[in-house]
Image (cartoon, rainbow, N blue to C red; front, top):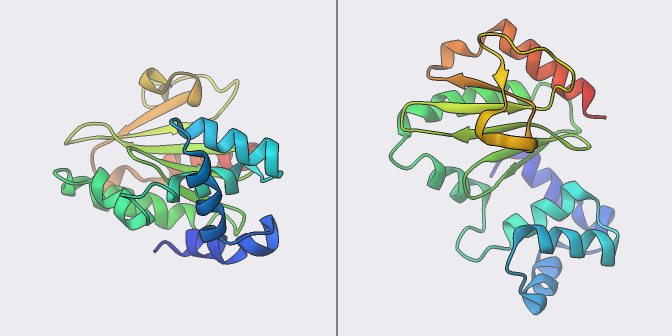
Length: 180
């Protein structure tokens, strides 16, 4: 299991008042049809912060109980992209201990106080890396958000791990710094 996710799960009782298993039991009693409904419920009814609520709902899905399962499913048939994902996660883990890595069904949200990047295997040959960089002009490489819509302000298309260069790391760090 991802180290940051395991730390979040370990801290859950202290930070939210309940363990992951207790939260999953509560969510199963309600059986929300949409991810966002579960997150809203935990935030409004139980005072859980967004990062914890999002993680709890993601991990409560019966068929994908671990972050490893979710990520493995995303890269099934796209194994050539996994080294790009791994390189991005390695860099993200250097940003600070306040970063939460939250795998979902088809993407991975990277959250500080709010999501600042989103990693999505878009095709069999490309990862789309979405950013929250409000008021940042687009460039040839740092495009508008495209299919991410309002979830992100910008997008970079990655086809090799060599594209995780200083420029890209700078944008990731800038998004991280702006996410407080």
